[in-house]
Amino acid sequence: MKKIYKLYKPAILPVAVLILVTSCNLFNLDETPKSFISPDSYYKTPQQIETILSGTMIRCFSEWSGYAYNPGFHRNSDQDNGGDLVITMNYGSDIWSIHWANIKDLNFAIRAIRNGSLTGTSKADEDLLMGQLKFLRAWNYFQLVRHWGGVPLLTDETEDYFVALPSRASVAEVYDLIVKDFTEAVEKLPSDWGTLVGRPTKDVAKGLLAKAYLTMATAPLNDASCYPKAAAMAKEVMAGGKYQLVYDIKDVFSMATKYGPEMMWSFNANQNHPSTDPRIWSAIDGWGDYSCDRFWVDSVYPEQPRKYAYLEIYGKDGIRFDEAGTDAGIKKYLYDTQENFDRGFTTINIPIIRYADVLLIFAEAENMSKGGPDREAVDAINQVIDRANGHQPNPNYPLLTTNMTREQFDKAVINERSYELCFEYDRWCDMLRKRIIPEVTRYYYLVNFTEADYLFPIPEVEMRLNPNMTQNPGY
Image (cartoon, rainbow, N blue to C red; front, side):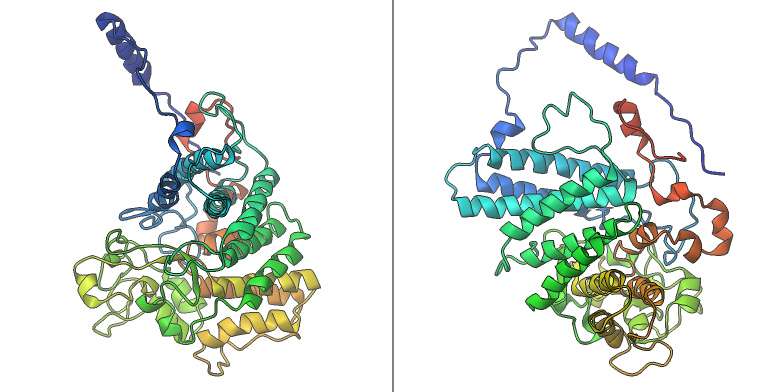
């Protein structure tokens, strides 16, 4: 049976409103504001738009909050320790709130440029700003639609959405906006930002557009016409030559490679804006807020150099995690110095998209659109597998071939995505779009599974405040 929770309307709210109204009448306060700066009238300079670009990402990735510290967001994937498919009300509500706050700010900035409110800027400068704003809006909506399904569509053209509370758009309508915004970003973003590292480029927009197309080709839309679109967009990134795999698997997440050549776009940390204490990633020598499911480590993840580069199998004293009485940690985010680890400080980035992901997107989409794996699809995924094996033959995890059926190759790609992209906020989304939760979940957690688990619940506060909002099935 699905989890059932009651919604309560706290009685204190009307009392609080009554107190405020009574106080205003008692003291006869003048309620006419002397001045008011609306969002539409605030954005006048490129510098003010820049505050939105940085501010939205800071919301997403701040020390002890957002994606920098959210072990519960994808806890129910098969690779995370502690997931049991008990998805409670308000699950992921903090991430929901972050993305809506971002969309609101991005819309005001987009509207300011559209209305010609900026002063002292060229058309080229405005295009650069607009490209970044549309890119970020597309990404924020992409995160929402994958986890919550159809959501209200609030854009720069939506009037008075603080007053006229919106209803939900369909999943297809949300993706229409995502594709439109990413496409405009591709047109307006530069190929390179020079010394301004960490900003999205034209190829990053192409990569995420490819990922959006791939998601549209799978559940819930199942629009197979999007497979060739995903393959074509990913192939443009591959052909561009700007990004490439880091050769040595041990260097993929090193501090020296946090801005390339494989990392395309990440949640960025620096000395002034550090990530959360790195000890959350270590289950052996740290706190283990994030750790691996033990069965997944020992019985699913293949034996290869990548396993020991990405997962904390051994502690600093050489003792294996199970011998130490713990679970395996996430070594991907433990490549900072020992000194920084000891003082609880790190500037490690968490990738949002990297080149390995693009190769796997292409392999999956090419196989599905061609009815089976061709040489290009096989070569793309084998680049990732070969590196995972330390560029050595591995009979336990061999390279793929064109002799595989479409179904065999597709399953191999999804498994490879699990191993390569583990703990990058990606596996759960693959489980959703491929509808494989029952297939990969530990058997004793399946008692908690229903089809409703393919969407998170709309947060309670949203349901209370917006009478036009409908809840996802099963909650």
